[in-house]
Structures are given as structure tokens and as C-alpha cells.
Amino acid sequence: MTLILGIDPGSRITGYGVVRDNGRTCEYVASGCIRTGSGLLAERLQAVFEGVGEVIRLHGPVTMGIEQVFMARNADSALKLGQARGAAIVAATQQGLQISEYTATQVKQAIAGTGGADKQQVQLMVMHLLKLTQKPQIDASDALAIALCHAHHRQSLIPHGLAGAKRRGGRLRL
Image (tube, rainbow, N blue to C red; front, side, top):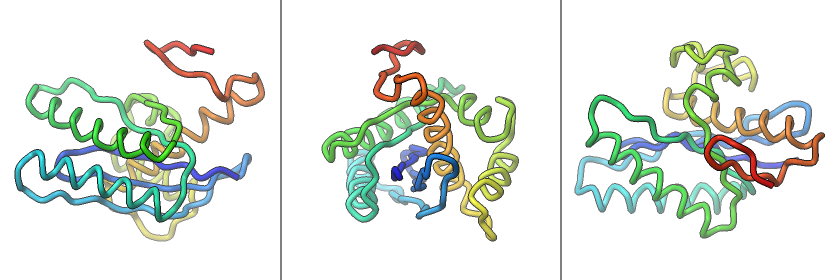
């Protein structure tokens, strides 16, 4: 059994989700949101760093999936998202987690079967896959989807002896 942390980074709200990968299925462990408020960017980044660190200490995951930055219409927003992502990655690496990155399309494809799924479709599939009776908050749902995506990718690589492979430039590196 492996505990997997999924992170949906954001400079104001960072979603997190923890699942237990049993090899055949995943079980819900925890999810929620790290709210950073509207202070200075440096303070919000510190809140992301500390919040992710606390989730790791509380639940003890050994690996983490995180969403890659995409270029939106607003370059400033993309830069802030990248900085929040960096804060989460540093928090995880400091505690020894293995980290994998996934595009939004990869996550949607793994969870809903189509890279064009909307947030509500992903949320409903997360509920179905984890047998949840209540809808998680949308940012937490996205983080759970990332954790599930990571579990699916890990399982598809293990039979081929590639579970320890790293991704670089979209390619697996041994």
C-alpha cells in the first residue's frame, strides 16, 4: 500500500488530496484546501509551503503528483501559479517525497477518459472512483484527481520495471 499526495497548486487556494493505492484500487484518505488569503505573494507562498508540509507530516505520503503549469491568457497568473507550485514541490522534496508532474489533459484523460472533460465531470468521476458520498470542494477534487492519475501511471509502469523512471521533456528516463 502506498500513500499518494495530489496537489492542485494555486497562489490563493491550493488543493490537496491523499489516497491509499492498494495496487488494484485507491481509497480516500483525506482532502482539503490550503487557503492563503490575500496578503503579499511572499506570505501566500509561505502558507502554501507550510500547508503542504503539514499535510505531509499529518498523513505520511511517500510520493506526490502535482499539476504542471499551463500558459493561460494572463502571464502574471501563470507566474504566480508556478511560484505556488514551486513552494509545494520544495515542501515535498524536503520531506523526501518522490514527485511526478502531470498536465491537466493527462489528469482528465486518466480520470474521465477524455482530455477535454470539465471540472464537474472530473469531480463526479473522483466521487465514483473513491466511493465518496459528498462532493469534495472543487480544488480538493482536482487534487484527488491528480493523486488518482499518479496512482494509475505508477501501476502502468510497475509491470515493466519502470516505476522508478523519471519524466523529462515528456519522456521516461531510466
